[in-house]
Length: 384
Ligand SMILES: NC(=O)c1ccc[n+]([C@@H]2O[C@H](COP(=O)([O-])OP(=O)(O)OC[C@H]3O[C@@H](n4cnc5c(N)ncnc54)[C@H](O)[C@@H]3O)[C@@H](O)[C@H]2O)c1
Image 1 (cartoon, rainbow, N blue to C red):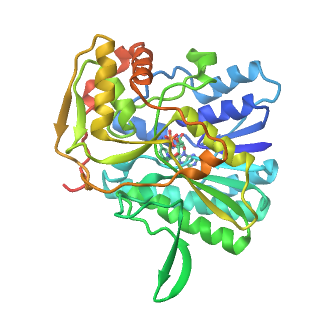
Image 2 (cartoon, rainbow, N blue to C red; image 1 turned 180 degrees about the horizontal axis):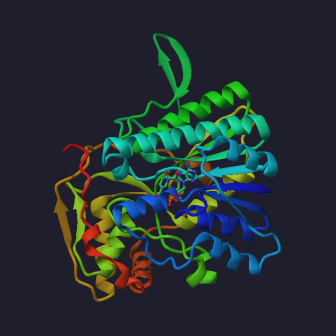
Image 3 (cartoon, protein in one colour; image 1 turned 120 degrees about the vertical axis):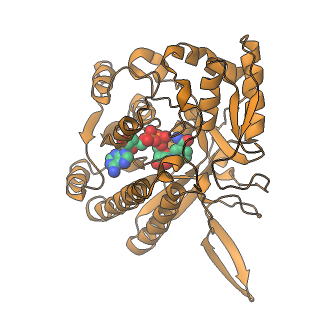
């Protein structure tokens, strides 16, 4: 397969490039380094990454027949994007290239506008490019479970069958996202559904849970070169990764609000598996297929308990520290999202437990010096 990976410098993009390359596919990688720019603005750094993407690809390509190619391209520059699509004509496109931070999107008007412009228009440019240059390609688009919010009914996989006044219809699942970032993904989904219906292109929208983890089979081959980025800060850090960094620094785990909020999670290795399974099983022409890409649900409190026990087994004594919730979200709610599709297609989920948390702590301990405690506490509030 010729596979184009958008957002290849990111937390998920880089491991995805190595994963597909290892499987023998032709990998084309693309990024515009916009995340690096936001890191600079906020003075934050990811842990554990010593080399930039050009150096990492050079090192990876030394031992591989089919070399990864890299393009420095902004999805907002449609001409540049078109010329790449025309040249590569990929069989599949994995689209990660969006601003992925909810707190960043809630930071200011400028940040909200950037997030929605970057994500929605970048995705729209891609759709037009696909229509023009590679209408048969399979677009594998990363959405998020956060698009749904926490409705008081079961969350289906993207679509809902309804009956209204005696008539039936299949509609896109009504969404109630909790940030301008999550909203950008909802807008993307609507645009993609229209494009598949109108132009007969094919797409899998992966509504992904919160990803955790620091290593994959490929990063382990040469940690120094192949590690992916690992954020523990209040802007890009996801909750499990942040708890692990806090444990490493022997700091209490900062739980927002009551900690009863339930969310969907998956291991970074499972992200790769899910994307591969989707690529190997493309949807029909004109189909907008949605998978809920998560493997387990936890409340934030439950996650903190697991990390606290794992820390204890590493000789670290910490506890929970409840903070006033900076976000506008329900803290007690029904939560029952479906996720059968990827399991039916063969996904064998990895479980988050004390052993795995303990392994993560051991790994992150190596980077302890690079962790700055000032980034643990949330600074962006949903309502000032
Ligand atoms: N990490 C998670 O827990 C998680 C959960 C659910 C969904 N997602 C989604 O998965 C995708 C990847 O997430 P991630 O954590 O790897 O994010 P990331 O920020 O680490 O990676 C995204 C990459 O895309 C690039 N990018 C952004 N805008 C671009 C543009 N206009 N043109 C070219 N490149 C651009 C960035 O420079 C960055 O390297 C995102 O779309 C995110 O919303 C992530």
